[in-house]
Length: 224
Image 1 (cartoon, one colour):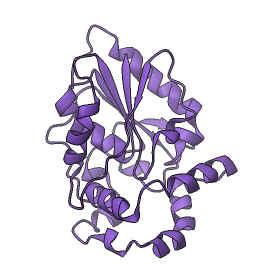
Image 2: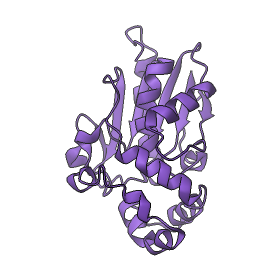
Image 3: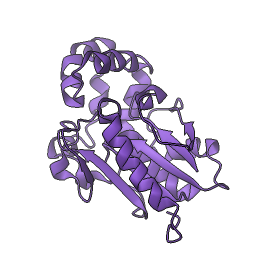
Image 4: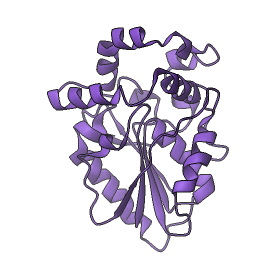
């Protein structure tokens, strides 16, 4: 089975470095450079050229990657969509973030602001251990500030997929400070999981993903 893995905002394939998913063909999608004002559906259309939709496949997305996976599903029709530490629509956003919609909070982001807010960002992401901190500090420099602004804007303004995705599995941590689980519906819970749990709790997340993948092979599995 082809598995297409989509990282979170500002991240790359290193986010999945500790995730073990068995004998599947892994394809890591990387964020393309997109102009400000691009929506998550635009990101999905761009990434769809990297997906072989003629072969049975599963989309696995983390955070922003999970949102884009839901948009991508309408194009590539996967066997299953698995989202981790993500949202299914603005109804699952905490109220403070919903209030930012339409205010363009990304405009205040500069290299200086990014540096000054790193401690808060690490706390929100649940980045605590030295290995996690080292990766987080590397990932924060993957994209330019302008690209981070475009990605933030796309996430904040997302209205959810045009149609709810069938065969969707949502995996979420109960210690996610950025996307609190209290606002999330119908998710498989990872105890103690933070927003960074695909790396910090890769074993637990991997087991949940593999359990979801097993149902993608059943005769009843349908396209999304």
